[in-house]
Amino acid sequence: MSQATAPPQATAVTMTHRQILEALSGLLLGLFVAILSSTVISNALPRIITELHGGQSAYTWVVTSALLATTATTPIWGKMADLTSKKTLVQLALGIYVLGSVLAGLAQGTGELIACRVLQGVGAGGLTALAQVIMATMIAPRERGRYSGYLGAVMAVGTIGGPLIGGVIVDTSWLGWRWCFYVGVPFAILALIVLQKTLHLPVVKRKAEIDWWGATLITAAVSVLLIWVSLAGDQFAWASWQSAVMVVGALVLGALAIRVETRAAEPMIPPRLFRNRTITLAVVASIAVGVGMFGASIFLGQYFQISRGQSPTMSGLMTLPMILGLLVASTVIGRVISKTGRWKQYLVIGSALLTIGFALMGTLRADTSFTLLSVYMLLIGVGLGMTMQNLVLAVQNTVGPHELGAASSVVAFFRSLGGAIGVSALGAVLAHKVKDYTADGLAQLGIPASSSGSGGALPDVHTLPGPLRAVVESAYGHGAGDIFLTAAPFALIALIAVAFIKEVPLRQHNGNPVSDEVERESTVAAGAGSPVIRTGEQR
Image (cartoon, rainbow, N blue to C red; front, side, top):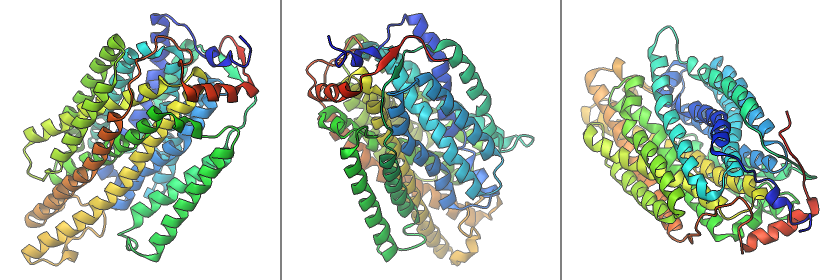
């Protein structure tokens, strides 16, 4: 075999079960840190925004800024993983995360906090993308479902532990909300140490260029779109010249990004990947799942604290049905997929459960029975557990080792993009609905809307008089139901997309997929820059 065709297999490694678990220990710690960065503030955020005198827009952007940074940098991390030391990259991502966390804890206003969250998002983007890439490098697709269960378990623990940790920190007077950002630092440092000792992968070195123009244009297009979604209807009307300028600007930037990507030697998001039907449909489904996963669920903490008057700690405990559903589904289904090699039916069932769960959550109100609410959240959790990791798995099964980084990061990119758009759009919907429902409730009481005293800031329901508190609780409860109902069609889109994916049984090796036209083309394209393999990780 010539050197031009050898490289794709060169990045695959053979490891024992024990070696994989040792390497995964540090990797999973890093992933836990990435998840913790977003979940630890979910129940603490209403208190944080209140103390920093921010409003619903600031609440949305503290979440969106990190998601946007994660979205924009995921393809960069994924592409670099195909070109250089994965171990060095994941350690760099951890370092960036630590810096962003420390600075976020020192923030004195919502503007500073949002800027620091961007830095956190850059690090979290690297950890999220590289965890998938490194695991795919170590483990054959057929066995990957088994280890994906561990990823799902860590995601569940991070999602469970994050809100609880954040809630306890905020409720503990001698700690305060700033420790929500400091708490992840020890885990990140421990992950750095463990990775240095346990992660040993071959380093691929070849001549290549990072597509900075593509990355810049993609980031700019997404940023303009998200800014428009978050400001329209509040700072200016949806049908206004400002909206027209921002929408046209986002479309122009997007068109330029596509043009650059089709001409770049090393595109950030390789257009040839989308000739593969599985990848294209998985991307569509990932966008829809991202909208639901980030966009709808991020507001649950706000619902429990404002509509139901719960503490941040209790808000975390009340989301347990959803998280336990995610934990059990991802772990059990991952093992079943490894045993059978079949995955499509679980994607279809998971997407269906997600759609049903969101539709039922659309009936949410301030006085909804918690028993019913638990069932709805359980359906959403099981649906997410059956879809998130398996969409990545389906894509990884269609490409060779030399494009695992790009292919994995494409799915993560669009899932984060869906989440960022979901948070911005659903946050705008929530703000608009709450304003209308509050005005209607006050009108029924014969009280002018200006008497609510919120001034655009998130209310502290415990300080409001009885009748006014009931109006605010009802408004936020009804608004929460509306955003879940808005998210339901996106889950339906995911269901339709996965239904059309053609199932290919998982490969039992880490080599190139056989008879994959897209892969053959990318192999020929990669031949011009044949990598030089060095055994052993660069220390």
